[in-house]
Image 1 (tube, rainbow, N blue to C red):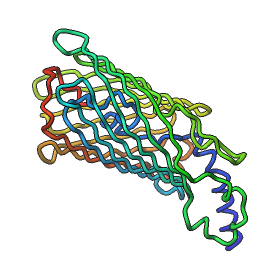
Image 2 (image 1 turned 60 degrees about the horizontal axis):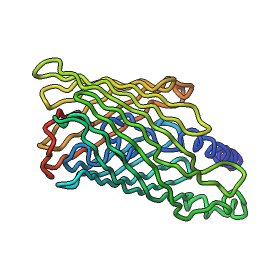
Image 3 (image 1 turned 30 degrees about the horizontal axis):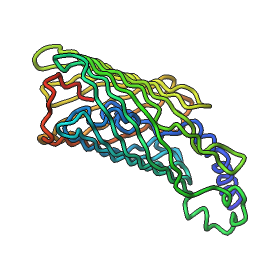
Length: 307
């Protein structure tokens, strides 16, 4: 039994670097409500203050699978074209723990007289902290393992940029939240690689009570396959978001988001895995809280695109 456990730990130690390369920044099914975490140009885009909390349990049933928590907030600065934001992400993968803490600043340019077309530029700056579980580090069987002892556990800086364009009923975003590649001081893997995100959405008024919003997100990390997400959501009576999602060659899912009080929304998503992992997992679960304050008072009379 002890030998089997040792083999299991060895396999995890070998697989973790490959999983880290493949995933890099955590992925979310409810990305359409939390783009500030990857694109600083979204800071202040709603003009009001928005606070978002999210927890994702990925690949339930797979030991060491990713578990991610995020906290983000952003708002416009009254009487200016500036927006500010803050994003904190905690990501656990096997024995690995990674924490990101980034601040955002954006600048908006109004492109038309009616204030419906806008172009916003943003910059993101902060730090990432990488660590391994104390349970593993304190295990006497691995006290002399150079793989464990040679990692750099200090806070490392990084920065990113983004651009956001919105029209009367649509929006597009392009960003690179990490422009610096953080090298590992072991031979196994880079701890952090440059990533690029491209997203967009369209809001259609079906009738007075129903809105329809398709959206997409494309993510590319240097050295990893491209990830493509699609979603289609219906917004019913300004109360309930209901729809589905599809991640190319990975999963299909369902998303529900409803208003429980003024300004407060609760969202839940479930992903059914369609990749080779489907044999080992019951799927991925994600829950989100989103609170919209009534301040600052929006200057824009444009359509709310709910992004």
